[in-house]
Image (cartoon, rainbow, N blue to C red; front, side, top):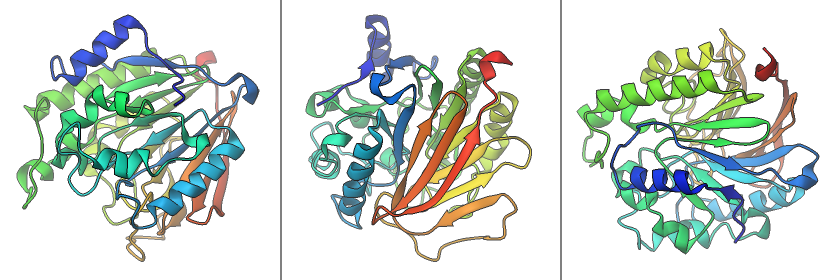
Length: 332
């Protein structure tokens, strides 16, 4: 399978240390992804979240359409916004759910690209170390998942943030659920370190586009709505550092919301399988540009000064398309 990620020996050591649970969140390890030469300087990728259900709840149908669009756009990679394996993550490195919900579902030739994944709250209900384990890359070389990390390309940097430990209710009111908090407690110290490291990385970034990816929404009109902890702690950092897009899953829908105090666009792509029809909070939200409560995914085409975002349904129909211009942060 294709593997476009460039991992330097020193960084590989960081990955191994990170995955094994030592020095967790010491910093955001950075990886270079080489863009395709044939796309005329355009970076193309898909974004999907909340998908891992063994092909059920239209996961297979969404995967088929992803393959079709991926071929059309000749994508560079796929971003997964978390909740990769339902209902309770993976039980271990050799859990058959990995192949049943990932390898055997996303089979299109056009999808044999790197998948950059964050963890969701359902992933934390299983064995987190299993999803982070290098062993899974031996099973399927497309898989790449860490708690927090950076992917650098010629025209954009992607900052992947581990958002589940931010949500207080998972600690104080877990109900019948059990979470794997190994490596992230005490939570306050962990969160502070993640925020500090992210802020430093964003400040040092010279990328033309800055894109932050997390599982939980900062802004959403879907079932879960806004994540108050992220709105309080993470959003000010994104605004201060001229982030262009925040991409997330968690709510099983597709949506675009514009920030009223910055140029940030909040893009939800959490409709990779089971969707929540009719479960919406406020369609009159002032910043709401688009909302769809069915299954689907998102594509992004990035050029140096322009981005084109498109949302697709389970039949591959374009539901919403939007174009944005960048102010070229490197020249500011």
